[in-house]
Length: 556
RNA sequence: UGGGGUGUCGCCAAGUUGGUAAGGCACAAGGUUUUGAUCCUUGCAUGCGGGGGUUCGAGUCCCUCCACCCCAGCCA
Image 1 (cartoon, chains in turn cyan, blue):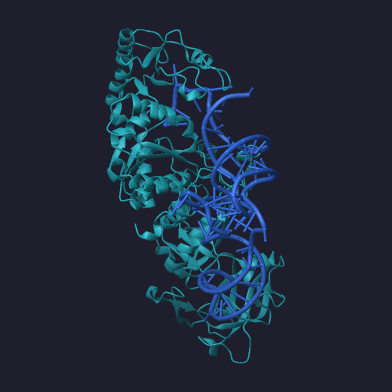
Image 2: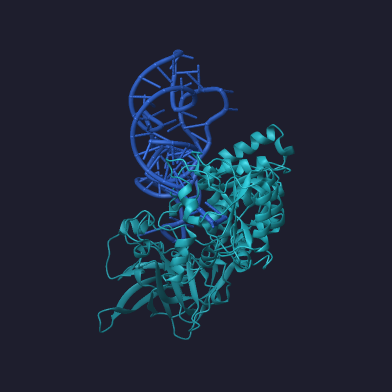
């Protein structure tokens, strides 16, 4: 997959890397890492970070580690690690080495001891509440903890005792000794170890003290020889702390932290917390709901990994706030599926058609191309019979000339087949059209009638070839562009039509297709078989993305 | 009232040492077409948050305003 077409265009991070390469920094080596916390599902915002870290390393012939940032056993578990690995591989990337912050717990502890010996860390016995009070505010300096001047010996002893389990949760904390009056709150003696008597999914009960992010991340990066540590822009003012810690210690390398802005997509939410609530309140069907921007959801929806990668490349990398339109994502998908998806026919809202001049016991086998531009995709046999189905919206009793479909007395071509004329309609007791009687012109297979104008081409499925399935079409999950920014609670802004179900027919061979393989249902959109088994066993096909529809614009 | 950031076309986003505004998406108008799809052609920022200044010349340098975002977890 690593062809040049996936190479990142010029951006501020690649500029930094090229500058580093030019002066021979890090011996010309580029090494990145993707460091998720295993506490939820990866989403398209993570995809941006994944593509960037793996993509940049690929572009500059470097390496990328997968590192689970598992320093908070209260929130994390090994199941999330498993799904994250699957999602990353599905997206198309393979890491050089898998690491875990917990791999470094012993070293992290020793470095902390080193800091205490240097009088740059101390055990604080203030309560969490008091620590907050002593920290000061955004505009007022904090003040030193009364425990700040404990002797090195006492600190050493107490920290060992913390590790040994001598204290209750929250009794003490290890803090860095930096500057309580720093204008940067992150530098006001940040805590780096807390006591938590809980089992860790990787280290079991070996530890009862766990290091915090700011202390752990920079050291982990250095230990792995990471050269460029890319992270969310929210960590920008943590950078001085990142550098401070590394400056105090003997490490093989001092990685450079570079922050870029996270992806925001219109009409959706991008926070794990908010998605979790949607899942827990059954507002969606689960973490893999096709309307969610989780990688699991996108996969179930039928998104092609290459299209997501293309999207991540096209949105660029910068530091400014951004709200990307869904249209860009959809465009990436269509571009990919246009060339890769074999064509087929499906009728979402069936209207029965009787070809009155075609005999009941006859079946004509038509050959239809699987792709209009790619002969290598071959052709398939499509049966033409007296009884078939077309889409309800492809017929009107009467319409003006702009309507290029079937009207009473008008002619239209059945895709891949004959030209038919609508002669009569049957209406049921409710006044709804129940059946259409048409006649076909046997001289029009592959050729247009010389003397008449055919209005257009519509798709269809023969009744002997029709498999009944459920189609799901999707709209954005939220009905407003910025569900996060609204005054209303975001859960109240869910689009009631975000998932519409249709009961219709498709060519029966599609029943054998696998989830993840997309097909274009001509004139409708791209679909894939849903991966979940339904209780009633009725097959479900999810719409990946619709076809561009210029008629909808004209028609309103 | 502290600190850190960001402001280039509706949405993203390029713009090396100042030299006279890339590209994509969207949109619009044509053409091709047995998918109102695809494809092709054309159009789409005298202006880069505002105002000054330096310069032959500034999105790029200086000054000054303005707007928006982030930070006070023993979360990451």
